[in-house]
Image 1 (cartoon, rainbow over the protein chains, first blue to last red):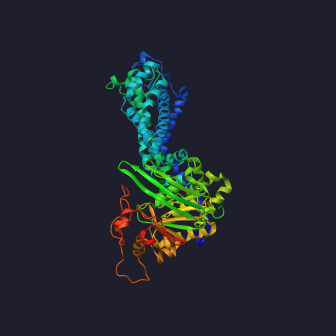
Image 2: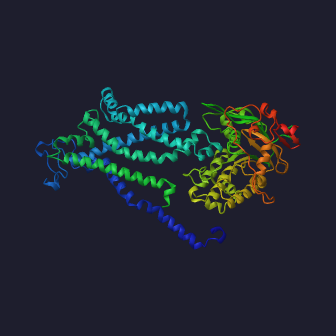
Image 3: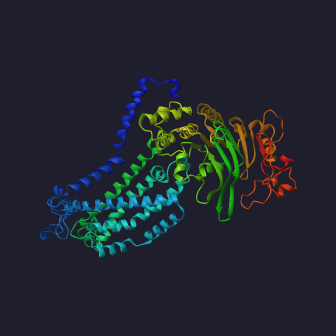
Amino acid sequence: MDVALGRPEILVDVGERRRAARRWDVFLQLNFLIPATVLLIMVIGAIFAPQIAPYDPLQTSLSARLQPPAFAGGTDAHLLGTDKLGRDVLSRIIYGARVSLSVSLLVILITGTIGTALGIVSGYFGGWLDGLLMRVTDISLAFPAILIALLLAVTLGPSFTTVVLAISLLGWAGYARLIRGEVLKLRNADFVLQARIIGCSPLRIMLTHVFPNVINPMLILATLSVGLVILIESALSYLGAGIPPPTPTWGSMVSDGRGLIDTAWWISFFPGLAIGLVVLSGNFLGDWLRDRLDPRLRQI
Amino acid sequence: MAAAQPLLQVEDLRTYFFTRRGVVKAVDGVSFSLEAGETLGIVGESGSGKTMTSLSLLRLIPQPGGKIVGGKVLFDGVDLLQLSESEMRDYRGSKISMILQDPMASLNPVYTVGEQVAEPLRQHQHLSGKALWDQVTEALRLLRIPSPRERLQNYPHQMSGGMRQRVVGGIAVSCLPKLIIADEPTTALDATIQAQYLAHLKDLQRETNVAMIFVSHDFGIVGRMCDRVAVMYAGKIVETASVRDLFDNPQHPYTIGLVNSVPRLDRKVERLASIEGQPPQLLNLPPGCRFAPRCYAVFDRCHLEEPPEMSASDDHSAACWRVGA
C-alpha cells in the first residue's frame, strides 16, 4: 500500500493536477454542453425578449398573414413566418418562452417539493399516516386534472397563477408515490438503523440520510415532467382555462395552428420544436445530473 | 451501592412482537450485568433473540409491532426504558453505540466516510473545524485504518469490506462511548480479516476501557473475545458463566450440545455432535422448559414447570432443573 512505501512527491503533484483537470472535464461532456446551451439560450431569450424579438408578439398585420418562413419561400422580414393574424411566429416563440418556462419551472418546484416531502414522511413513518397519505395520493392520481383546472379557472378566473395552481394541485401525487416506494426500501436499510444508533432524530434521518438517496428518482421525474407540464398548459389554453390570449404560450400556439397544419405548417411546427427541445434538453440534463450525483458512477 | 454498581444492569427485559397470529416473545425475561471494560458474549442460534436483546438496549425495536413490555435497563444507574425519546437519543452514539453486522449496508452510500464518522461528534459534542476532524482521525486511528487523513475523503464503495467494517467501528467509537454492542461484526468478513478486526477491537478496548457486548453464534470468536458468556435459547438466557467455565464445565444441556458441536483440534472425534430437532416457534410456547423437546436429559418436571436461573457456582448460573438437583 502507498502508506508502507511512502509516496514520492512527484506522484502527488501529478495526481493533484489530474484531479483539477477532471473537475472541468465534467462540464465539457457533450451530454451536458448541448442541453445546457439550449436551455441557456431559451432562458436568456425569455429574459431579454423585448430586446431580441424582432416584432411585438401581439401586433397583428392582415396584409402579412400566413407568410411562410424565410427559407421556405417567405421574406426575410419574418424568419419563421407569420400566423393567421399576421403575427410574427419567431417573436411569439421568444415571448412564449417566458410563460412556458416559468410555468413549468414553478410547477415542478412546487410539486417536486410537496410530493417528495409527503413521500418521505409517508414511507418513513408508515402505519396509519402512510395509509392516509397514500389514499389521498390515489385520489389525486385518479382525479382528472383538466376538471380541477376548469373548476379553478371558473372560480378564480383564468390567469398565470390559476394555471400554476391547477397543475400543481394534483401534480405532486406522482412524486409522492414514487418517492414513498423508494423510501420503503431505504427505511429498512442498515444505514438508516445506523443513523438511529448514533442518535439522529427522525427529522434528521429523513433530511440527511433518506433524502439524498431519493434525489435520483426525483430528478428524473422532474426532468421528464417538464414536457408534461408544457403540454397540460397548452391543453388548458386550448380549453380557454389557461393563460388567456393574446399572451403567447407555446402550447396555445401549437393549438392555434392545428387547423392550418396542411397549408401553414410553420405556425404549429416551430413552437412544437421549442417544446421538444426543452423536453429533450431536460431529459439529457437529468441524465447527466444523475450520473454526477451518484458517487458510484462518478469515477467512470 | 454506588461503588459496586455495574455499568449496565439488565433486569427481566421483555420484548414482544404483536402480530396478527399472536404474541411473539422474542426476548422473554433476560437479565445480565456488565462492568466497565468487560466483554460479555451473547451466543445462540438464529432467532434466539440475540439481536433483539441488543436492539432493546438502545430501544430501537423494529416498528410497528415490536414493543419492550417490561424490565429494566440500568445504565450508569439510569433506567433507559423510562427516558423520553429525545433523552434516549442523547445516549445513542455518545454513551452506548452499536456495530452492525453488514458493513456493505450500514454505511450511507452518498456521504464520504469522514462525514459519517463526524456525524455523531457533530450531533453529540457539537464539534466543528479542526477539533472535529482531529477527533474523526483519532477514531479511525483507533480502528487501525491506514492513512486516516486520506481515507476521510473516500466514499464507502471505494473501500474493501474489512475497511468499511473498521469505519463502522470508527463511527461507534467516535464519541468514546462507555458501551459498544457488536452484533456479529465479523460475519460478513472473511477469516483473515476477521482475526485482524477482532484484534483491533481488543486493542480498542484496552485503550478506551469500553465495555462490550459481543453478539455471535461463533464459539471460537466468543472464546477469544469475551470475559463472560450468556447463552440464549428461544428468547431466554439459559446459562451465564465465565468463558473458561462455560467451555470446561457447561451445565445446561443446550450449552453442552453447543460446546460439543464446535470442532476442536485437540480432540479426536470422528463425527461432530449435533443437537437434534429445531428451536421452538416463539408463538404460543408450551409451559415448561423451552429446550425440553430437544433435551437428552429431560424428565417429567421439565415439561410442567419452567426452570428458574440456578447457580452452579459463584459466577456460573444455568436455567435447568438438573443444576439444582
